[in-house]
Image (cartoon, rainbow, N blue to C red):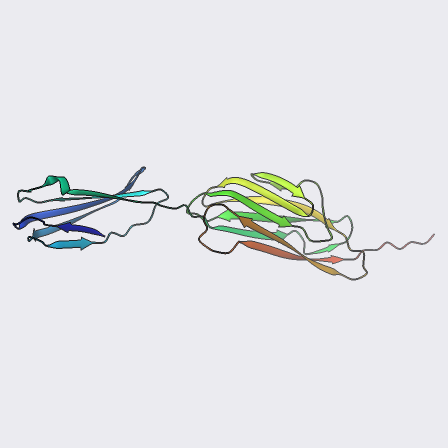
Length: 220
């Protein structure tokens, strides 16, 4: 809220109050108010609504009147509002096939992490936990960032993911199934960022694959 007041002993005529909301990149909004008069001791409060930008905001208010002013030093005021970065990550995961034969046949898991913003997401980590029975084929490929593999866990680290952008991680696997019955396994991927999130939960996505046994009986 912004307050305009007359601290003098006479009525102030033709009063104009102006509020400029701005950032280091320029003005966000400018609002003006006019009062025919402000009597001694009269106070008028106004609330300015605006869309919060991605950087700190400075609000500057000014007041003028056609009546002589005793103290021009208090005709302007400034307040600064700190803006905290906030990111909104989502993650999706799909399998090239959700039913595969055990052995050398491969399928691809495609994982997409996206940032809906409004701020850049810093230190984004995508973790793909391969289930028991899944065997990594080749090296996972990412559209950006650095990929690492530790046992059954594939990780993708992205230094920064801008608002309204996404990154893709592709993991190719085959499956083992030593039994004579089909087995279902679930592959879970999740994403985190060091930038504060607007939701308290860690985004995750999973896909379930059925591994069909494949034998090769022979006689000689």
